Length: 376
Image (cartoon, rainbow, N blue to C red; front, top):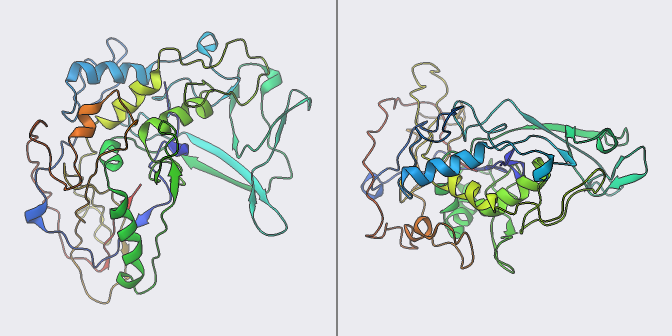
């Protein structure tokens, strides 16, 4: 269940695209803001029964997908042979299911003589078996023979924290051209200090289709279903129709693909129908820094902490209006209602549920700093 770490992200999130100070928001174009809140409490009994989604599916359906997101898998369902966690919620649960966590993923590698990064081959099973091209070193294994250890030759090492996935359905809806235009405008807007880069990645469920990446620490995934499938096999070791091959067969007792219940579809539905994280009035607490985190049903943005003393005069931080689009044919057929609510024109279709407007935060002081937004 699971998508432990938007390593794939866990997303989002993510080579961040940072929007500098010159960005302004036309409030008249903002429309209805998307529902926001931390309304996915983690329960022992009847998981998901008290949860509220963003309105794209009914709460009963939403709660059922959350229960799958929280479900712990065992060896009999395909866990491992190498893995990091037994459920998605094990890595995405602070302060509620779908949030981030203290879980850190271990990445490693080295550079070749030309300075290019090289993912290592990890020896397991007393050196008798090799897991090739593996920059991810899993923390756990279902048997001692499969346990991974970091080779001394890999001198590039880092930890990546699990990222929040709440509100990622709005990030998924951003049009490619919007992200490209943001990156193209950044050098001029920042005086050359910021130069965002977008990358095109394949959508696993739509063969031959590419899209601007937006999920994972390196933006290596472009859809939540692709992200879910990738995280399921890498973080839990459970293969699916999208990722049908395990990293190793050492101690493996199940047959691929192991996700016979198509849990990855439930993961994608849960992530895409969560509310956006609620804005927090941090200005009074941190007078030199401000974090903006606002989403709209027709405009989407994820915040970045403001960097003080980058502008010569005070600027008011604001949010860019981002244009949603229709997902490519063949992607996430399980939730067509979520896809249909976004059009290339940025208008919600009449069939979509109207969401109540959330009052804007009162924390809007003028600060001397770079006003920025990060699109995960």
